[in-house]
Length: 240
Image 1 (cartoon, rainbow, N blue to C red):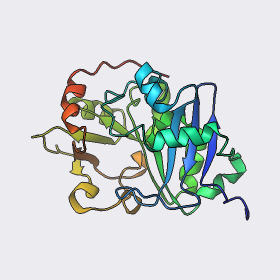
Image 2: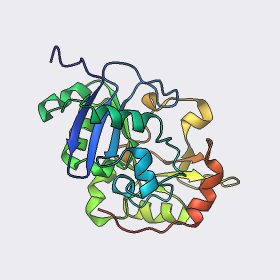
Image 3: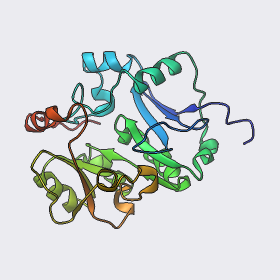
């Protein structure tokens, strides 16, 4: 493995539509919330992330997430765009399956951008096995063919009704609260929001692999005002 750590990022999977890139191997992440985690980015290959949001092609990586597009907390013009450009220049070599051991001893963030159900389950499972800890969230938890991801990912639930359905299907949930909402039974506030605990030091958002309560967090950030409208206007469709 010596000599393989020269690159900060690697392609871990790609198909005709998407490329999955892992970054954070050669230098520490500057994300003060998550801490020094390896970040996985699911990107549209044909268009840069800004253009994909404008054209609607981001659906290929975000599915039916009601926050998709300009409501998303991720600023696609920053890290996702820079990573896509680096990939286009050939800056990320492909990481063969035998090199997934590079995740050993690290903390992993599945889906820094994009829905991690687009990472094939055998690859996601292997990364989780090597990682000391991980986080991951999906809005595709209703899809019957994606139920095995519940072991590793949190179901992104937008309402108390969604929480009830997801729990009934065996998922733990992560719910964003609108102003005035409170955690319900079986939910606790995100420790990062209440105590400043970084994701790399927390073990709660790792799907059903953790026998813990589900997590909620109050809508925050520059786009929090858009959250309530996006949730009200959601229109779910099953996307594979």
